[in-house]
Image (cartoon, rainbow, N blue to C red; front, top):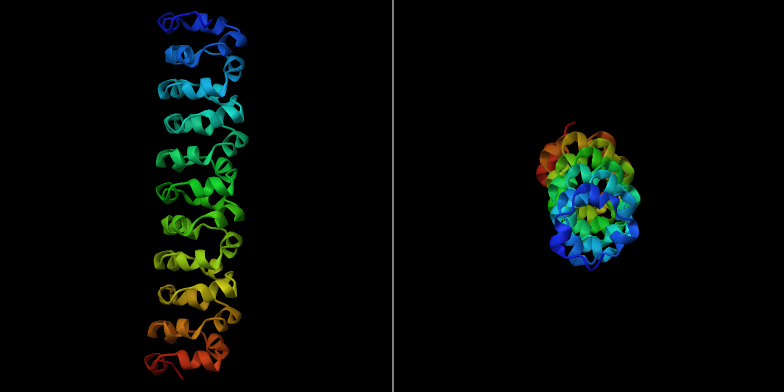
Length: 286
């Protein structure tokens, strides 16, 4: 097989390629593999393709990888998947990428995950996203995270959401933030909470806010506190409200203070009362 010229291999038809044994395909050099036409590649039996070494897989052109059928791709081993170059991974179409099993997907290297295009990420199946490890999650580009849909976000686990860097979290759309499960949001570290934009904080539902821990509440910046709407602020429990620092209390707008529930006002400590601005006290009702 190694004696065949690349020009010879380039003209092989689908019937001829399909007739080769797995051992013969496995014997091809990387140069010979690259000389096969895309139609020839598409004609390879799944068993023949599975017999190829990682070096042979990595040597394939992006056009050859793109020509692989979903059946062929779904039969690649984890080691073969890891052997794909970043360019080959980026060349996979949506249907091709979604044909991969969760085991194959979780076996991708961080470099391969980072190579995924925004179009690929936006169309990933929820099961594939849910299979990503913490390291793989951190490898996603901020542009990729920005295109994730609500269903994709909602299906991510606590560990995956918790693995995101502050830059990645800030890149999530407000609709994506609103789709985070309350348990996942409650698991965020204080640094992650403090990194959220004011628009993201304002997009949180009352259910999400009411499930934040006191340490997370204390981590909110003055700007984040001021971005909370009346209903959002009033969704906080008295325990959450009394955990606010004097700086956070001072950051409340007159509109927020004017619409505070009496239970929250009654729960304020003397230090928190002193944190209120004179303008805030002036708008308090009887």
